[in-house]
Length: 427
Image (tube, helix red, strand yellow):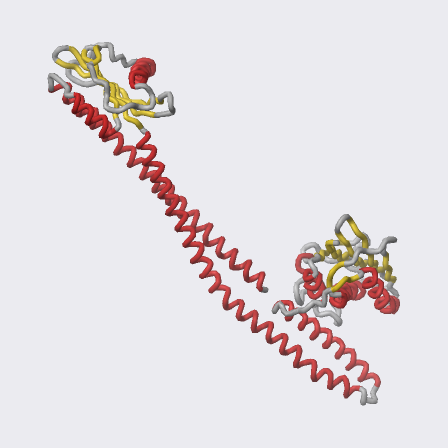
């Protein structure tokens, strides 16, 4: 039960974190996209304002101050190139880009001409309005630039302006913005995980408390019922009526068996079931099992067979008494539900590093829809597999014991139409 509650807490936590995390990530991506768009708009506006400022100076001043151009370049990481009637003005720039300045200017003019048919060497058509094109350009060192190429009419002809903005700072700003968003998302998810763990633990606490009380009740009731059963059994020895004594002893055996099974399962749930671990010879366990049930099967006109390999089965580490109890529950189930004159086959073999024990009967079998529940407590399949001697706990007990020995039990259809229970241990 502890594992089940732990699994429930993990599932509740995952559901909470995943669903809320998805919503949080979607919202963060949308907000990040909006923030980046806003950043692009601001950068574009700033770039355009710088171009307009230079264009205004060219239209209204006879000369351009190199110090002013240097200030513009350094402030916004710009490259400024001005030509007067297709003759470049002398300005070496105030900083050195990764790609040669002259190469970038020439490449910008070439792209403007080839892609936009915009020639800085040709006089503009209009004598009043400015013409320009905008695009992006890549340098030789994977350095990217935003470019504006403009033609500006003037009284003595025209000017051309080629303005490039290094996009490295823009990309760095976007990178930092993304890192900040992801950091916020990560911290939020960690906080959400911790909160979900706390809330899921609280949600399962009541279940754990109820289960603990349930286990304690079963254990206490089982212990308390043993005493009156012992007294009744002892008193029956003094009873002279053989018929009533036989009936009473049979019912006492049924109640004793039920109490033992309930007590074992309660100890398993409470993790208090102790195993006397040692080397177990499965050949001996199965042989003793066959001898114990051979008379019972014969009384029902059933044929019980035991098939062991020629070689000795490897020893396994475990509790012989508990393993015998598990196999007894499985074989008892087969004998109970196989028809009169039916067959029950017990076999064992080794395949690679796995020991396989099979107990098969030719009874009514188990429907596929019921196989997953056949090991559930108090669960019995259809009415054809009910009897008064079983309470639906035997296979549950067997499963718990086998799993405590790191084994696995499964059920499938036998070749004779009944059920076959297969137990596997790692040798």
